[in-house]
Length: 452
Image (cartoon, rainbow, N blue to C red; front, side, top):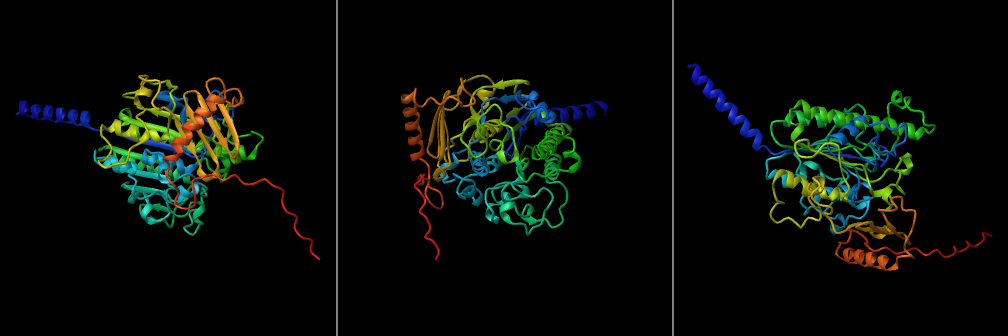
């Protein structure tokens, strides 16, 4: 009898091992909002008040992408590209207003691809990809949603469902508006994400955790604000907001460890664009900020951790960006895009993260359409246009974009401009208006007639 019992236990053990070996890795995306390039303390340019121990530990556990980019210089366009693995401009998303109004519903969204591999998917926090029920995350492939559908400027304590939608609007659980929510919203997003990990730990899961921190309004618990003394009230509050964001990262990592799934979970951490000047973010050593195509508006903190596969404490100097996350997740899951999917523009980052290639893109493009800002990077060279101002920079020699080489390298300028024009011609029109920029006349204002 004892021999039979041992035989059964051995069979169960072998079966459990086989299950563990065949299980798909989990996928976690942590997206911060308007975080400065130097507002992570693993960045040697970070000022002394910045302390992000949990984000730093995540960086130590995996790969820091030193040339990691967002595909937009404002919030919603980056999210549209991330959710589709495609240039958001292909389907007419150039600005935050266009993205926030909703992506075309014929695009295939991130979690829909993963369903074919048995993934359960949860979305948490800021959505900013459509305001009506059709665009709710649970109607776009996610199994669970906790968050708000409007833009990032949601109050951090006020959950009033009557709040103006442009400031984030109501907080939802799936399709239900929550009437009695309380607490600091950064903390609530973390709690919901941790609960999801605990519930879904026995099967492969995808968690998309999109904090609205550290987007305006500048709000944080007063006792945490008092911990900082930068001489700048807004900067003090930003640091307190960052403190809670960093706590959230730590709690998510701990939840994965407690669930026994940390080692085979790929965690991708990044910001949706550069730090905002209005919040006194620090983007050193980069030029510019959110809403600019200079590096400070698009180059972001970008970390990829996967303990079972990626070397801890390493760096990747290959340009990668947010649109690459979906193709990378498909590679991690060992699946192809759904049959009939539109071609992806993003690339699998794993060869670059593993040090097996020094290039995955021929070029990267940014464009705000009629807003009049665009850029292209090919190799070390970058051409940009900012509402009539033209720049050409060699980023390998001038990461701060101080030395405009447009006059000394006119042939390179024309080469990159031609490359951009060819790309732009392939992009779609927005739902309203035109994608083309029309420079406004700077003529003298007409004098108003005197009132008699």
